[in-house]
Length: 285
Image (tube, rainbow, N blue to C red; front, side, top):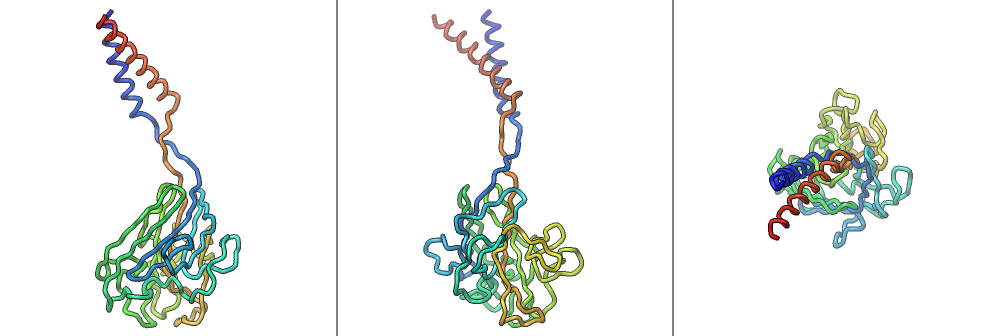
C-alpha cells in the first residue's frame, strides 16, 4: 500500500511539472496607450508635453494615443495645431518649422564635421517606460535619426531612410520603427524604395511598410502627428519634410493562458502530491 502511494506521489510530481511546461502560448488583443515620448539626439531633446524637465515639447499626446493590434501612429515634425481624425490632440503652438529636424538639431549637430551623436529614445505607455540607446559612432554607424552621423550640411545631401533603418523598444503590444523623410534637399532620394517598389521617394514608406502621409502611394495611418513645412525647401517640392520619424505599430501581446487539458494535468499532479504527503504523515504516527 505504501509503495503504491509513493508511486502515486512521484507520478503526481511528474504530472505537475509537465503541466507547468505545457501551458500553451496564446495571444491577447488588448490595446496599448502611448502616453509620452522623449527623444535625445546629441545635445538636442524633443519630447511630448507630459515629459518633465524637457523644454522642447513639440508633441501633444493628450490623454494618450490608443493603439489596437495593427494600428499605426507616426510621430514626426510639426504636429498640426488643429485636431483631426488622425491628430486627435492639437500640437503645441508657436513651434519653428522643421521642429524635428533631428539630423542637425540645435547643438551639437550630428554631421561628419561635428562630434558623433548618441541617441536615446524613451517611450512611456500604460504598460511601463521603455528606453533604447544608440551609442555615438562615426559615420555610418550612428542612428538614422541623426543621419547616422553622416550629414555634411548644405542644401544637397539627402537624408531619407526607410522604416527598416532602425528599431526602438516601445514595450509589449508595440513595435517601433525609425525612418527619415527628406523632400527638402536637392540630392537624389537616399531611401532604398518607394511604397510601390522602384526607386526611393524620399519618405520612410517602402513595400510591406508603406505608412506615411497618404500621398505618393503611401498609406495614411490611424495617427499622423506631422505636417509639411514651407520656407526652407531647397528642392522642387514645397512645402516639404525634413524630419526624423518614429512609427509605433500595435501588435498582439503573447500571454500564457492554461487550457482545460493543462488544468486537468495540474489537478492530477496535486492529487498525487497530496497522496504522497498523507503517506509521509502516516509514517510519523
